[in-house]
Picture 1 (tube, rainbow, N blue to C red):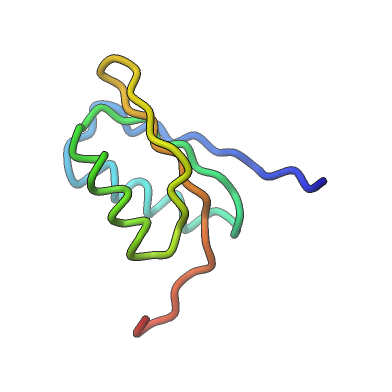
Picture 2 (cartoon, rainbow, N blue to C red; picture 1 turned 60 degrees about the horizontal axis):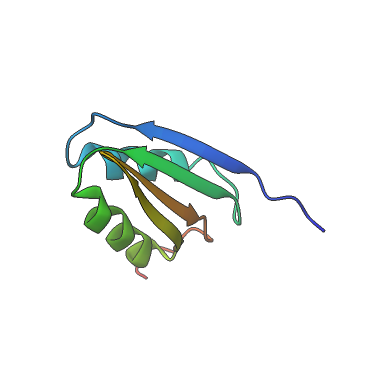
Length: 84
């Protein structure tokens, strides 16, 4: 069985659009299939990050709320080609 790397991004206390921008920056450094767990406090991220995943082909694995903290987990996809 192949082990998949899991990465954590701390985007807590950042306001829109920074959680999704930091997610995009971090995702660009990861390999296809790796998992990124984004911890944030901006409620808009519950809409913004899943929408960003749909546009870029990443897989949204889970969303959780722990008090004021949101945890959004996604799997990195192949980079999209220009024009797609």
